[in-house]
Length: 399
Image 1 (spheres, rainbow, N blue to C red):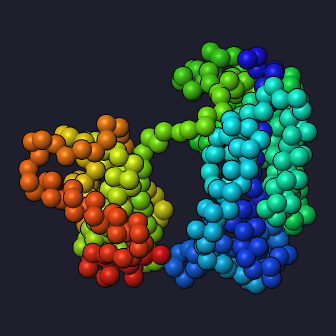
Image 2: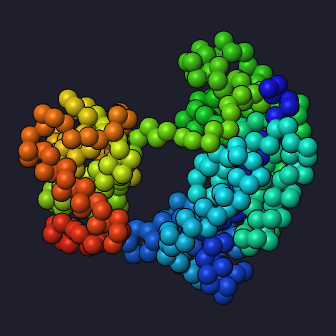
């Protein structure tokens, strides 16, 4: 299909967590509030209402800082189950418009409506009205010939609204105008341009996406390596990626932030044990095994260390994951250095599924049966139904 014939929608539910909380508690409407953790436990802002954003609040901001900017801020705890339930309903409604729906987060998705009798803008307005009325949720939509431009268009359209209310915007970039739309935007708006790349480009006098587009591929390759050619294409508004209805995960992780920095090795190891159990359970639910184990450590100054190791054989066993993680901790944690955040991750997936091996020892088979039973209990009664005794003394340190 020719690029100019495609019609791609980027759907973004405005301040989704806040919108769901307002449905649950209408008294929050029109008020400055944030969904997130407690300020005295290093909580961060997961989402904030549009009245709160007028004070300079934003997602991922420490809640303590948010309170300094807006002393009357109302703090609401997460309602994760509620958000997931509403998200599933919205995604189901999107699939009634087209089967080509690519969820990219709990509140975002791409839709491919190419070849439909109505144009993309007409479909976007109809869809926005439906979500507004059926789910009582504000939603902004970007419309373009590809995913890259539709996403950026939506970001820019949402950002233009400074009223203290959800933007509920629709921004359309007609076919053939992709490069012209992108040209005046700062380089940071382009996928693939992070702070370091933007700084490197700025030193060379490249400040806008149009400046990138004006460079030759050779110039960009010299400055950025192979990444340069991809950046040049994006700056031209070129993106041929399809809307993918399924994504294969490349990694999986659990992490936690401590309420106070932790220097106790035993607390760190007990936390690694609980995180490893969670990762192992998720692997077994997906019939996956992994060969790479990674730990993540964040110090009190917010610098972050990641280290990984490769196993001799793929696994989905909690003990194996934990032992590899603990070995990494012992090798790379300077004893006594305060830790703010700790995490366990896995990658290198083996998709062959979990089966009891003919030559597995009785001990291994017994462990697998035990873990399977524990997983079933937790699925039925919740994660807290069965806990390690060590968890009871570790949780108090965590956010």
